[in-house]
Image (cartoon, rainbow, N blue to C red; front, side, top):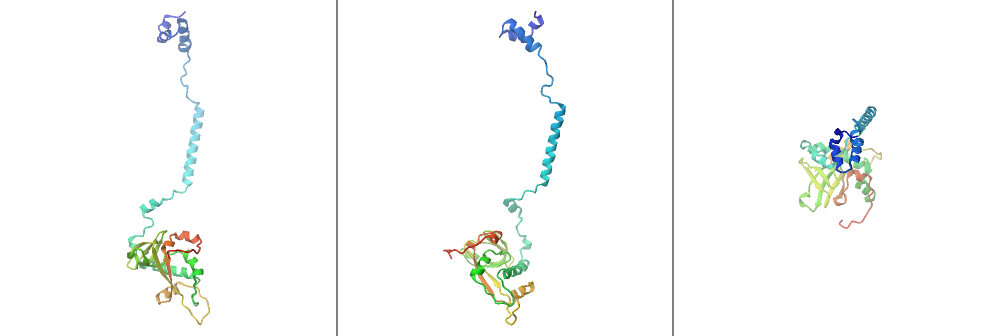
Length: 250
């Protein structure tokens, strides 16, 4: 028999609206009054919780160790421009600072063109052309002889930066000029080594002999460089193979 307490239960009143009295009373006893109450239905085992925390700590330690071993991310081109990493400071824009660099470049030209002291210079387009096309022009003294922009003609200085599309030069007036390569023709001179007709010995060029060859009014090998066909970086030219092609604008 159902007690008055069960019949007055609010759950029995709600169940009586949908079920007959006996069914409502059975559902009340099975589903409500005698239903077991689980106090911690979702709590895991304390031992498993410790194991999970331990695995997570190991993952974090491994990740931190890998992050320390990894190299720092390199700067992008935009970040380098903003920071001015490759910009030459104003106090270093002086012609006399880069004159030793020009002397080194002359010795470099002597080596790649096989010019030696005590011998007559013999340079051909077939032999010297590919070498000059792949050479590095940092330290070369260039002069703009022709250009679509008349204001660039006559600009002369030592190259301090050879980029893909421009030459940055320091003039004798200690001015940094940025000259685009496109639609400009540059001229550069290489002093010939001293020739000794009486001596047939070969001598390797030294620093003193290079400076003497430059300062004592030597004979020059004169070359012209067409900037429109020279739009490559110095590092790319070193590994690039140049072929002779017909160029209609020459």
